[in-house]
Image (cartoon, rainbow, N blue to C red; front, side, top):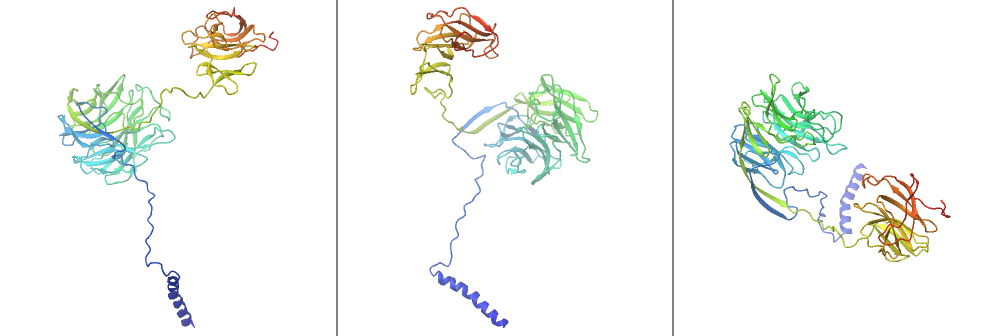
Length: 531
């Protein structure tokens, strides 16, 4: 019985494909699969041209904010200039381009064996750490961050690792840094230090010759928020030291003027750093055996302790391999400073710069149109007969026949005009004027706008004039001024009235001012005109 059932099942399995083929006798043996559309967006290429470009070329013998390093053999200097990396002999001369193009590339550092150079580059879309050969060939990306970006990398003495500053932000865009360790082959990295908050920065790592200590600068000013323009002669930054063997972290160089950009000497005897002394940024040495601090050179450019300096408070500099000299950028030049004599000698250089500049996006802008639609009108009033509207806009009085007339200037005065008010018979308009030179006055004018008549005799700050019901008086406010318009001629403020007067063009015919009270705004007569 079981064998019979199994035989029936096998027949059904065989028959099903045959039935399907009979139902679709014209169906081909193979069907071409539909082409799949990739949802992946094309990644932005920093080095590609994104619009019209032009080449510019020039020769320079100076540069701005140049990070540099000296090769372990003492033969060459590598430095950055305008986002490109160059190399030249330690004695100076014409520099050779190692890495250029649209990408922004800075902070070059020689590996301990001198065969490779690390640098910061945004060629992958954000600031990451890269390594290239000493001749600029074979660039390789070490870190691959797309949000927590990195800079200021420094080699460990064994040449296998790089320590860099990693950037973190929170609710404020400024952010703060942490020191992270990366193997030369890449990877996620290892956190060495923890930021104390999300606004006070830390960076500029440096490693001791034996690899045990990591020095870095950190904003240790009070509070937990970043503030611009703090006093650098107090203490903003300090140099901290992390013991990689014990895990201990302590403040290492402190005091007035702060301390930034630490750089230990190759022999391990000194720590160079930058400190603010009154109005100058000064290169200092600290004897690591005695703790003595020695000012070495006060010709530096100004450091950035008062500002927010993601890429470092001062550009990177370097010791020569014999620990006798420091090579540093300052005032547009490169200097070699003898630590024994404290004498600075300029290392002259020449760079033949070639840059590809992309044309900026330009949008047509109308700076001053011949005409435009007024978006706001002020102080609109209707004539007693309801046929005319008068209002203030763009500093002038305008009138419009209701309901669909076209607005026209009421006067041709060069004064600014405000607060119009009709007389009871609708024939006159009283208003206030303003000029930065003549200050304010009260005027009245007929509805045809010709020959305005000045009513007030003393200049000041006049607001909200209004006729009495019989048209014989005008009540108004005289103000005391403000911080924008000034306070001169603002004495005796308050509410006043004066005779409307027949008046003649060019003459003040309003009569004497009569004080009512000090407080109040926008005064109006009652219907009877007796109050």
